[in-house]
Length: 162
Image (cartoon, rainbow, N blue to C red; front, side, top):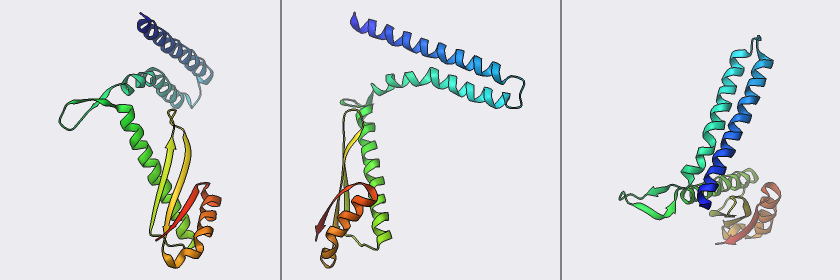
């Protein structure tokens, strides 16, 4: 019975949010009436109301499971887990590109870069580290590279000589 109460509470919160948004939209529409911006404001308010109605439905889709390639439902892989993995891969690739760009601006060549992130349950990045592999001929610049990346990007950096 507690699950039904939670659903009822969620629906009431959703309805309250929609009511508040519609009252706000009405007030804004009254204030802007008889101006040249009225059509534009109505368009924005319509999008605002659409978001107020649709966004709470996103929580329903985050609990759905994703079918695997064979068409079977994966019981252990949810849509949110899949999305968080993709999000983490994307963040790592963007950070790698940032480090590569900063190194090229400084004229530093590298053999490889690996960025690792630690993302907690609330989807906040708590730790970012980078491992930069340098050639033996650039071994004297290892400390400089680490300091440079830390100062330019705020990413803790470890250099590896190969």
